Length: 132
Image 1 (cartoon, one colour):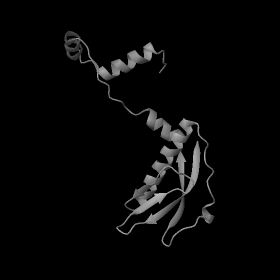
Image 2 (cartoon, rainbow, N blue to C red; image 1 turned 90 degrees about the horizontal axis):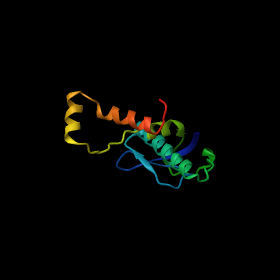
Image 3 (tube, rainbow, N blue to C red; image 1 turned 60 degrees about the vertical axis):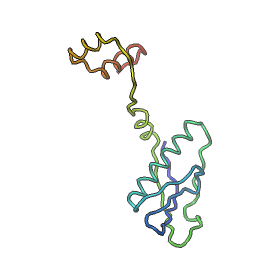
């Protein structure tokens, strides 16, 4: 799904921005400058919306950015989130697993220059009947 929500970028005295979404009550983020802030805001919004979808919770309606009360110096901007893209990245993340095999099998596989990771993935897909 694609979402667009208004975000408030609040300048901090020591520099950078605190960034929060009036419609999202699950925390906030920050950035050292506007570019990093935009990246952090998008990542934050994607992760929160992904979690809401996974929980099957109600998706909050975005408010009208023009009606947000702001403090002097605040910047209100719209941030887009694509949870389909975020989900693909999150679900294809590599996970390290520890396994044990007999020493003799390990030695023969190493001698044959077997790629353990590839072989395990291939075997798991076959076992689970997952077509590539």
